[in-house]
View (cartoon, rainbow, N blue to C red):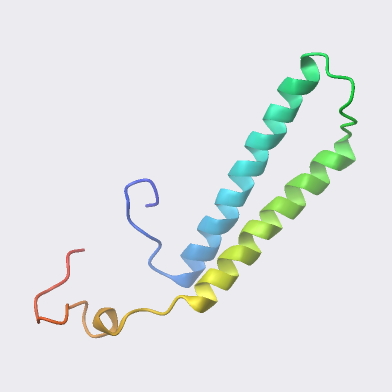
Length: 93
């Protein structure tokens, strides 16, 4: 759905995609923190609590951001009228 260039068709889909994207990015970040910690960097004070808080806040941030976008995005009048363009031709799906 997202990787093929299409967009979520509902606002709920948009919010789910935003939360999923936020989750994906924080998991990637935590993996990179782990790799850096294993290279011998002693200045990182990483704990399990830090990881869980990072995961919760980033996922929540992705969902909040997607909620704001879903609220602000309005469908175009041409999409509401049977998915036609202003010239009367059907819009590509």
